[in-house]
Image (cartoon, rainbow, N blue to C red):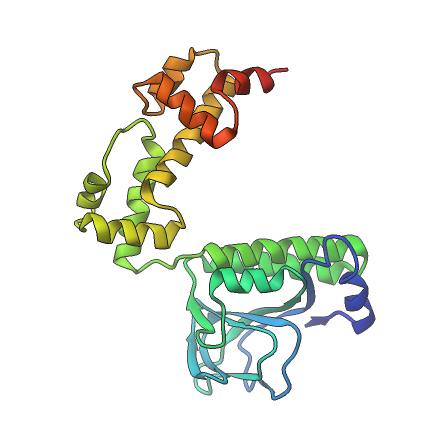
Length: 277
């Protein structure tokens, strides 16, 4: 267990990089018999606990929640809470406390609240690897460089928690497959109804689920994919604009140019010249 002294925390919160996110404590508890903690006074850090073995529970003002292997507890700052290992099956934990200006944005983006503090992880090993990296830097020393490196790993971890969608939700997995098809075939001119049919959903239901999962409507997401591929072709090849347009699904090169300019603020030809100067 490593705890950053208060004066160093306050200093880090004033420094570029760590002012956005700083790790104030971290640790690894294997088969933690009798482990538990109760905080009746809220703290300023978020507490993140990854359970890799065993079971336990956590409690917030909204209730008590069971915790088992492959789950993460995310306890936001400013709320009393408690947690403890299971008596018959003690948990193994990787954990850290984080604080900083960017923390509220991460918590909001991931929907991390006291109402739903426990969630499944689709990539437990990836999350643990990042906590282990935090530990490595915190064990090294408390210099600005080490604290910044630990903050970088914590930033990656928080971003992973925001974007994580656990396996097991059949509809979510189906939407992922559709998005993967769109990424692999940007040139395909396919309607929303056709994509919905692939996963046996109505077009309206599919469109709603897709936007909820990716944050963009289907066609806007498709346009982003096409424009990303167009940028790559413009940068790395000398193919005519019409060929680039066709390669990303636009039969009409003039329409492609208008769409490209709408997204990038310049025509494909200007973009190509600008990036080759």
